[in-house]
Length: 300
Image (cartoon, rainbow, N blue to C red; front, top):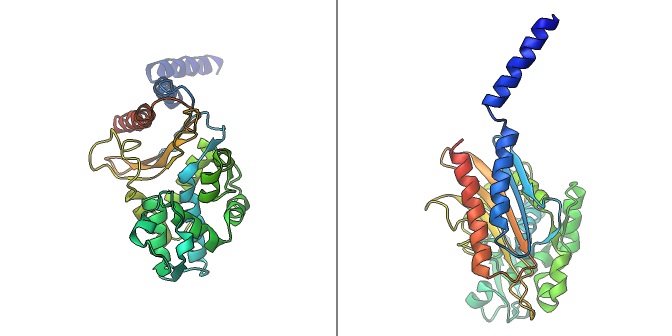
């Protein structure tokens, strides 16, 4: 028996040498992503999850990063949970006062309805908030749900604790430091995206609705989508802070789910923070990371 056991051990060792483990392959991918991230002089956090295979990879995955408008994705999740519970409905009318359409902030909603004092459906409000990242739409949605604190309680009640949603877009706009209170780790955002896309957060109808408006996202075309083949389906949400007086970018992010040519999917969350690196380089880093992971899975 001892001889047989020894023989099997040797055979297993030989096979292991001849066929690199999935862990070793993921380590190789991680090294490549680390090299790409070094093009940014600042903090870069990454989370990758292959939904069908269960592979995971992260860089600074447990570090908190400011989300900026990425938090409009969890905000939409919280709103659609209310829809699933019958508290809200997508076709219900929401009255928007003129004073809610603040100037000096990104708001296609304000551009379309400059005089305010009109009704829009929750469906339309979610489209503005997610697909075009409307800041006024975001804060109107927050008020509808009872404020950022209520949204934060919703996620913490689900055991999703490495995320903090505590301030509105208007509050972030008034104070640079406030954006850092709306934070999340790359791993937690990756897990949230994974649970959502696999239908573990919302009803099928609500899941499909949010996927659709995330695919329609118009912001950040040079980030996750930047180097992927034309026509690649990407459901994503961006976040950007711009620069402060010292020339520092607080946040430049993109998170989402990419559909591979074989119909499988991987989650990707890339957060960049506290950098003076040129914005075009930051965006290209996100694009390179997405392309590298896409190519790695296409070859599998």
